[in-house]
Image 1 (tube, protein in one colour):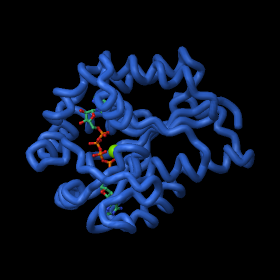
Image 2 (cartoon, rainbow, N blue to C red):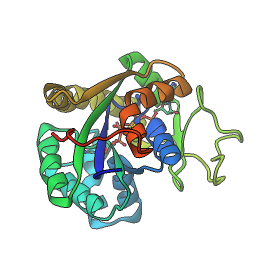
Image 3 (tube, rainbow, N blue to C red):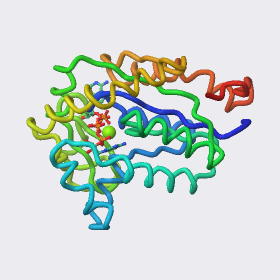
Image 4 (spheres, rainbow, N blue to C red):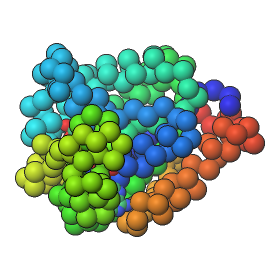
Length: 233
Ligand code: AP5
Ligand code: MG
């Protein structure tokens, strides 16, 4: 595959970015970077980054742009696979602009963004039943994707937990922050004709097939059947 490409996974809280992103990366051999996961890990370890990010996340606010661009810059430097799938970054227009700059500096090209969509009621319902594995990051849902054993991770058997920011009032705040700060990022990619939409209001397997359909050109290119050259923005 010619060049190194960045793909952005966009969408509101609870739409399934983590569920789909983890599977795409596992099955296609892509590198997956989820900024929310990096921040939660930093909080768990009590690092300076975690200490700075904690109160923002607990309130459902965005962590300041300069902290996030530093984090992504580091991530771009350390990867040697042909595709990085970014989940949760960029989330503001300032971050999207910074991503272009950082990508160029580190030898990556931004392919574009895939936007997952679902109704707000459905998102609230999904988040209220979400459980995650604090050790390996696997994502479950008590209603739609329950673990095989009662509240234990199928992969590593750790007891599952509920995310602190999945409490109802924080969820409402996160949805409002998405509307105000991240929707303009959707426009940012749409304006440069680099936005693909996927209706995520279906079961996870169907959403996965739809996503793979939209990402077909990247997948075929990875298999050497097409070229992505000329698709730089
Ligand atoms: P982050 O962790 O990125 O959270 P988010 O964007 O709010 O998204 P979620 O992780 O809640 O949802 P998801 O779309 O991944 O859904 P999932 O697959 O889990 O960010 C958290 C916080 O970190 C932010 O609020 C902010 O403070 C900070 N932060 C992170 N990045 C930042 C940045 N760039 N700038 C500033 N701050 C930043 O699925 C949800 C549930 O639904 C699960 O239970 C799942 O099993 C279920 N489910 C999934 N798909 C389906 C389906 N098709 N049908 C039914 N159920 C489904
Ligand atoms: Mg997520």
